[in-house]
Image: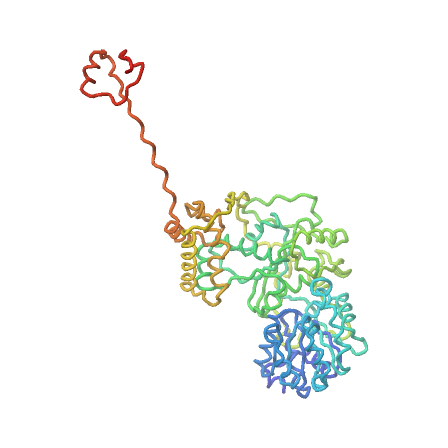
Length: 593
């Protein structure tokens, strides 16, 4: 009743058990699917621990800020220690026990010298209830080379008194990840409890699709998105393995969007979807996502389940999760790219197995090296993951990405919130025809040969160039206000026209290379060329007019005798008009003077 009166909802059985074991000063591992309410377990113990303090270590600043705001909304005093507000005054307030919830990154809790002084304060350490590690799988997957300090979080054990327990929370923690995390945090088994729930999300339809076009072109996205303007767009999240790939996916989608849809996104701020990496997935809690796409092979099932699990966080919804994989990871691959199916034809593939052998791990490593900024830092394929075949179904995949049942296992729903709406299709192995109908015929592949860009040679900026820069900046600022995009001083103008494109336009105008709207797009690839191109051309012609072509040289006139007339007649006819030029060898036989 106390929990229900405080938070307005009745906690689930697994949430109560996790909170109970925390209050018993045990080290707790809580493994539960994405969107199931793991954060709720942070707050329940605060109602019964005599004003104790909880320290939450989060992988991302945005996630720490989100947790901090949620704590304050529930009535707990909280503080998010970040680079901007980690002041001496803030640490003094923490020592004075002003805050009951403190969120911090691994690098700050280990690298800030003021924390060493904090551990020496008995007043603070006696009030410290536990240390919670949100997204605990990052300790293993990110602690190797991406963020090395993650693997050193176990050093906190030597600074803290014995009564401070550790609480590790994650949606994906298979046995090898859990064992590694437990070892890194120096957690002993005799005082440890594991709360484990199935990782399966039955309200998400799983679909694995082989790429038919090159990965870099991203043309396969036209098979899952409807760009004809007639089908309503469903909200989506598209995950890639690097920032560059996310930007390329966004550009590809924007290029194929109908002008009317582009106008809605720009003018009204309608959000259709997000192209992102893991960072956005952890920081966003979007309840109405009905389509999640993983673009490209990822070697970790933990990463895959985390990303696909962002769909249908509202248990009353169902969603589709599509995994686009390169051909080399299928048994049907024979060393060359397959040709795409004929236009308008949707093929129903036979049951295929994705490769998970040692050879393919090597292929995966080679592929990852091709992605210069790969952010799939969980590059471990365990034995459990390797034994998952494409025809084994979703239950085995979910089990490989979570945990087999031991210690405390809760698989039976206790309430309506735990009873997630079941999928009527399951996956493309059980119902290939039904899910394949969700695909659209791919659009014609555009020519990959782009117009050759003009190379800018060094030049001295003229007065016209300076005027053009000023006019373009003024035009951009006006458009930001006109489109109601003035929320951010830096990013808002970049939405209309980036500084890079603006400088490119000035350089091209100097050499008179922008004559038409088509030339403007070919040389800049500005996404709003069709919408604003005529206005830009008008500004260019005003500041730097096109050079006028030189006037043609006058042609000298030569008098030609009329045919059939005699030389005498010619002499008489020309006599009254003296010749302006005298030349030797006249046809009349006159000698030169």
